[in-house]
Length: 171
Image 1 (tube, rainbow, N blue to C red):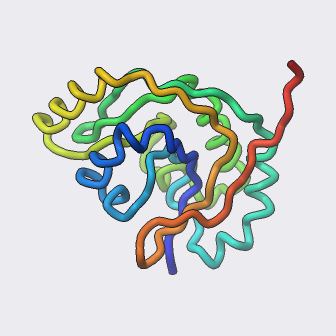
Image 2 (image 1 turned 180 degrees about the vertical axis):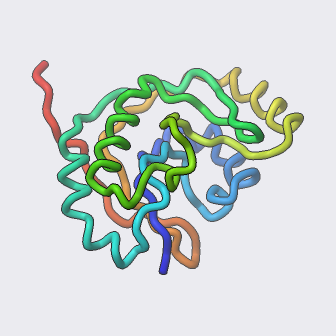
Image 3 (image 1 turned 120 degrees about the vertical axis):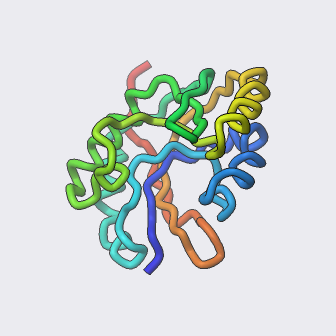
C-alpha cells in the first residue's frame, strides 16, 4: 500500500528551492513539491480514504493565514526554511494528532513539532553553499489556504485530496 502524508504545499518556494529539493532530498526526487509537513507518516492510501471526512473537519476549523519564510535552520545534515508564524502549523499538527492518535507527527520520533520546509539533506559543506545562496533570495511570502493529503504512488508523490482552511475571521 502507498504511504501518505498531510502537508501544506508552498508553491511559491518552487522557483527558489525546487532544484535543490529534487537533487538533495528523497521526496523531492520523487516529485514532492516544497511543503511543511503536518503528519507523516499517515495512513496507507486505502485507509486514508476512510479518514478524509475527519481530516476535512479538523482542518476546516482553521482559517487561511499569511506565512513568510525569511530564515533558515538546520537539523544535523538537513537545511530548511522556517515558516513564520509557526504557530498555525503546530496547532494544525496538534489537532490532527489528537484526532488520529495512531499517527503521531513524524511517527513519534521527535518530541517537539518544528514546522519547516526542507531545502536539502547533504554534508555540511554542501548545505553551507546552498544556504549562502538561498539567504540572498529571502524572504518568500505565501498564503496558506489549504492542506493536502499526498500519496507516495509508484510514479512519485501526488496530490490526493485538498482540505480548505475554512474558518472565517471578521475583518
